[in-house]
Length: 64
Image 1: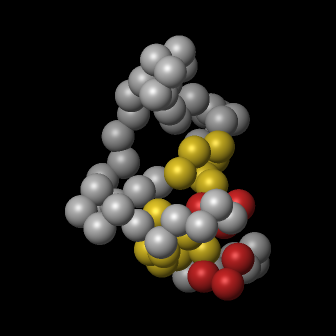
Image 2: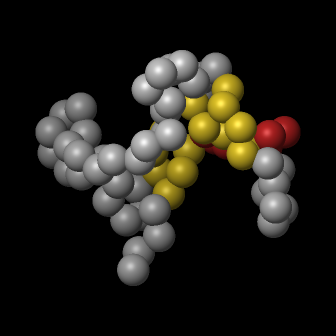
């Protein structure tokens, strides 16, 4: 997996601007990074899934 920053599809703002939720997708498989069973507890497993639109596929970069 490689996480890169760039312009959003609309070209208006960086896709990883602090506070904005985005999806992380594996460029080789096309699968999204998600949290197994949508757990919210610490130490939840992070896995690759076929995109299904659920919130566990959304990630947010914290403000520094």
